[in-house]
Length: 147
Image (cartoon, rainbow, N blue to C red; front, side):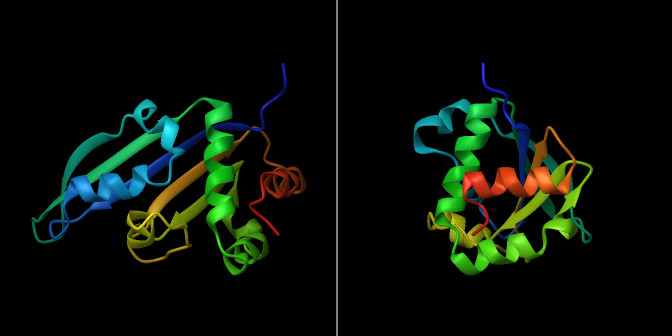
């Protein structure tokens, strides 16, 4: 059996009071391989914002290594070259104790596109089985995340 390099991927996103939680969920699901969307259950928690407004926190974890790798390959193949170059140049900043942190634009995901985002993004925490930066760089290059 082949050794998989990714332990799991955690996806999380906030749906603010001004957003439809079902549309935010759809945006997150759009990142998943279409044939595996039904295999991911997002948990919903209701939080309160600074002014008491309701916020829905959506979170899912993908523990199947083959699914996790397919998810990353799909995201990587849809990122622009500039975004992939940004990820490579920011690898040290994004990698902490084997966790690689990625933020994707929620609006782009709703439109079935992938691009890096900073404001109100979909968060991905990719847990690698190694914390060595050289090994993570090599894994990400094989997946196509880096140019």
